[in-house]
Length: 320
Image (cartoon, one colour):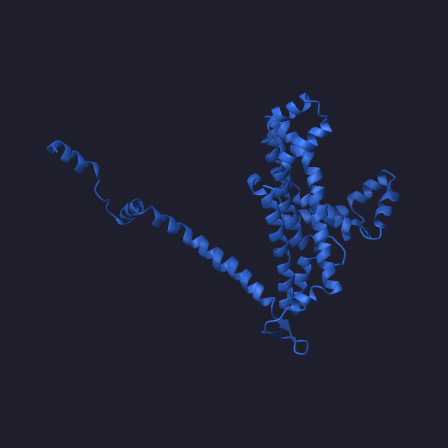
């Protein structure tokens, strides 16, 4: 090896930088896994201690019970609290919440699909920008402001009642309110009003994944289906819907889970019958029955675990 080669080899390695930050930069450059460890440790500790730790504590609370005489928590392992969930009153709350979440998800999918299809297939340039603004704009306003705005819209003295009166359709609104299950004194204190507000609030979470999935559908597949003699209905059923299904399922994860755990909308707009979120709040805050509140909280976790496993098999995570 010549002297020139040795000289070039020495000068190709830069000397260590001075100062604390310079030396730390050199250490991280030589040991990249150390930098990765230091970057991931704080969020993992937060996730493990604050989030997962609280869930474990919640799960443990659900295996305790309340002493009927003293009203204090009995810290002995028991399944009696979960047995209380099967009582007619509590089981009715669970069924009511799951049915509402399912109906909101189905309605959101039916409304979102044509909107997402138009945006994916036809909207271009400024029209696509307007589409995104129209979908995202409701998300920029306060959640409570939107709910209370709907409370005023659906109230007996609200604008919706005024519109029905001006169109001489008050008989139709009265007929809807007189329905045995979904009706009430006004839409603002009925299951139908709760359903409408749920759909409005969570609809953007269904539109965006569906639109993203539809944009990935090659246009030549639809053209080939038509060239082979398929009717529009057959093309939709055999080509478009199966390819868009992962996006729809991805959107349903949001609409179903958010409806399942929400307690503000049923509290502000709805009847006196409780949903799971309201039951958790009532049992922990008013009744002081923390074990039963914890058992109610476990129900959406179990339901969503099963739902997510099914969604994963349908490829929903690839559309997120």
